[in-house]
Image (cartoon, rainbow, N blue to C red):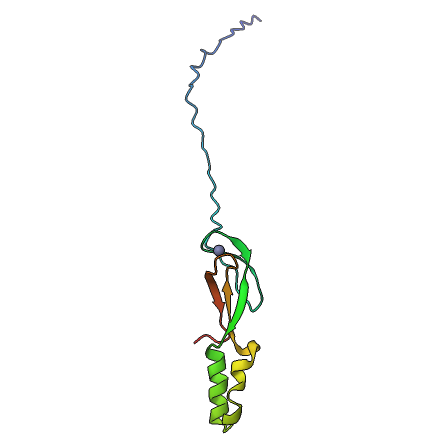
Length: 111
Ligand SMILES: [Zn+2]
């Protein structure tokens, strides 16, 4: 039994110097996302670039008028002014404390 071991050397690879790299660039777009506004001050992104705790004030909105209208309908005309002084019926306007920009409005009743 004779064995011939032949060592065949593989030809040296030409090493390509251009390595293709896949670069994944992840861009998170956090801007423009406004959290749901409620009736209390919330951390919001102002359109001017501030991230602030919003100032809130109350504004007579649809709900106030609906309740007032119902009172008139039911003959409670002399009480129809009350909803205009009840904050929990009013819409809540969120503004930026730094520049006063209105960021959003929480509406009690959307029509
Ligand atoms: Zn601002």
